[in-house]
Image (cartoon, rainbow, N blue to C red; front, side, top):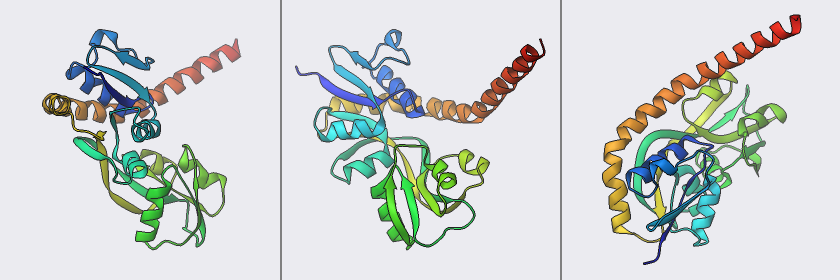
Length: 235
């Protein structure tokens, strides 16, 4: 029997945690084998590859992977409705927003990871712009780097937007996460769905706790480091 090739996000996002927990619960990864830096798992059921979200989607399109777990924003951007969403995983919600500093100028340059999504919503919102420029990340920083620029990016809690005093002019409908594939392996999807009902509540709480505590933990670590640095400087 041919093994299934599955892709889930790497360790750079919370979706990675969600994907790993789902695979462990469905018996696709042994809990004892997990390590945050590990990029590949294999057993008699499946090969599991860890990649960035955009890479996952492209590998599915190239038929190197059979199923991927990714964000709906990336799926919408890359699949263009050509790949079916087989299972929704409603853990958290994001929105695609246009962000800018001060005032949104006419004929603005738009920096984004999602040019197809940007094009759709700019037309829908009837916002005039000069051109859409695709970048790989840190979209919000371009509002500071380039005068008369804006970004279209996903917003979850609004923490980055608020701290940097960015204005969100318009926002899209909500996006979540899910499993995508060209074929429907009923036993795999049923296994994931059955286990997901038991773990989604816990995942939501974990996500909430991470969001609430992350900034405080980082700030405390920085303050502690700075205090130690001052002490060393005095010595």
